[in-house]
Image (cartoon, rainbow over all chains, first blue to last red; front, side, top):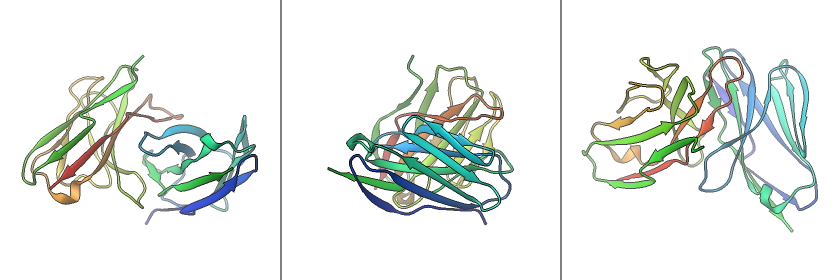
Length: 109
Length: 113
């Protein structure tokens, strides 16, 4: 079967750095996406990785290791507005997205 | 630019009734998707359409049907609602091709009693 694993919840302090991990087992791999979803809102795109390595975009970075079936999202200089759920999704051999259940990130002052 | 709109925002529906959730995008995207999101579970694909005139079944298609008569609209119909279809429904679209970032509508919160 296909499986995406993420921690259910994480807590971090404003101004700090947090790393959200995602491991996956899917039928094929055609890219990995990270989305942010604030409570009661729609998911919004953060990052896309298809090759191994680190993609940096401002305060957010995403890393991929295809051989390990592993990715992480790194958030730096945390702000209160970063309190949200972070969704990991893998595009499988049918080019459909398989979604993790999401990691709820709580930022404390 | 509106992006993707969904209607209604929320709905309470009696079991056994039918309902159509509407989704419209103005980005001229080829591909459109319907997901349901339930607490503790990832987004699950119900149906998708890679281009106008074609549709396909996702992970959880039973009890739902879709049509794609044109590029902009992708309605989702529940023929006879059941309580297990209580969920938040998101419509999404993408250009298609290799990049395939999906853009999401605001969602419809449906309660079936």
